Image 1 (cartoon, rainbow, N blue to C red):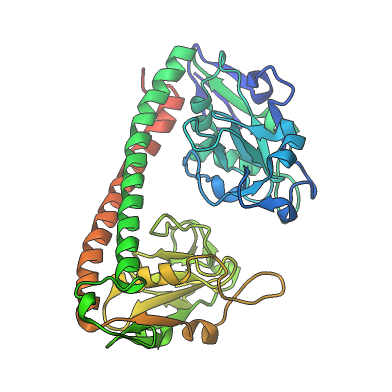
Image 2: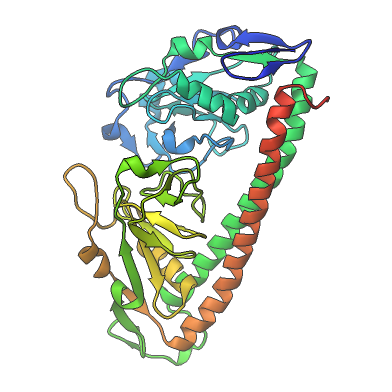
Length: 416
């Protein structure tokens, strides 16, 4: 075996090293950049139309695609950017900012066509030469992500261009072997995706229960309770600070940051938010503000109001606040905040980006039911939250197993 020195993978006997330029489809628009400049900007966004893929739809952790949070442009405007259209099995790379991110467009999603944004590059591979999913696994593996980041050009904000993308190398076995490797890795991804769907359904069930009881007031025994001043008798409107301890983040100096797990996990924004729980990438040896395990995390800088949970003690940066129920009704607080911040930036001011301060956050009013209803809801929602946590742990173990298997398959260490 010989090594691909730049990316670090070995090339098994019989595998062929090709560049991206050699594996792209035989179409003029098979490898293009997004519509740079202001041709697709917020002034062209509409409620429905052709979805625009942005950075939030791509990850650098082998997540194939995040099919949510789209903005849309009209079909008429989308037709102006034919080369930038992407379809199922096309690969999309982030080319500016968080380079190394890559996604593969799903073939079974609700949309037949997407458009890449001005910070992305598109690759449509020649399916006779390469399995698109094999390419995705290769390019999104941790070793390759680091390699691409090392190829970045520019100053404070790194980037890659079409020339760099086309020069990237990939080692390809025969197409049948590619397909078999993909089937091994996809078995893990299918289990992970099934769990993700179960998690989404469970959370939606809890959110519907919250809305049924505390928004529409169809709680157990509601038929016998009067509505006074817009809320059931015995209920109260309380400020957020009355029901939760609030810790506003404060970022240490960057010289204390590291990615070697020295110190405590550090979060100052939504970059490492998951569906429910944050994952840890950056650590800090300097402790400023602390969020305790099981605290709800709320983003207080753009986007204001995005919510996650930490399962461990973390250092809290200035873009986040930690909230902790004063009476132990953790699930009620979580779903109350989810309902209150139903849209991002629902509160907050800022000349450049939306932000909120401690006083504004503390003053947010929530409807609080009786203690009996609080306890009943927390028991039901708490059981759902426990299932979500268990499924999340299963996915973490599946992900770890897949990530250990992937480089061995790509190096030919495991025969298929």
